[in-house]
Length: 233
Image (cartoon, rainbow, N blue to C red; front, side, top):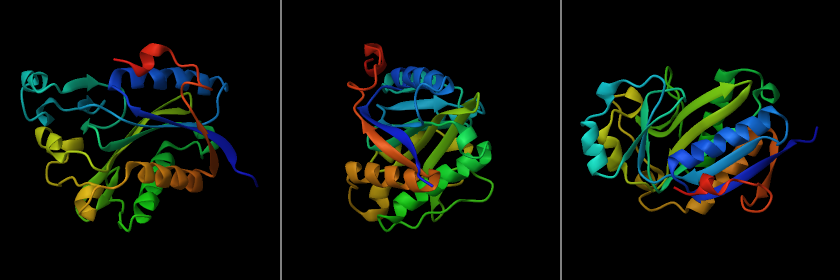
């Protein structure tokens, strides 16, 4: 059976708030059936996001500290606790109709984990799941966090894979509320920076394999009519 067509948008570096607004627009379009499954790949400037399960004590400093450092704190409606994003980390937001992927959020999460595991395997990195946790691990260190929201069977939010980003930002929080496990990155494991374009290609290929889709690569400023504010601060 032929795989379903989907869209891949590579947006570069986009601040968190406009990226969230873009997700909401695409989510509404996916719910309406106006667009196919869509995966956004991007990076964020330094930002700490607070999920629905956020515990204030998982910020290690007073909020004024983050403001002084130019680090945005952004509440969000995704699942999970607190995490952070910064340049060099690959963020992926799948706007997928779960009715075409098993109608099961937990199965969807496991599929995203598998896609990241497969993509890392292409670089010789042996990654795995950890029982009782959502995300992807290498040894005892977390390399990818996942937080999803599904509404009307369509997903929002997604995953954050540490590629070449500065991991010191994680020291200012309790990542995902897990105090006794470190975080790691592809660069740290490989001992050299990982080419971001190659990582994106492997992630896209892994998503195609796991979800039985074929991506159509789309330029956001041609086929997709995005409001100008979506890609600006």
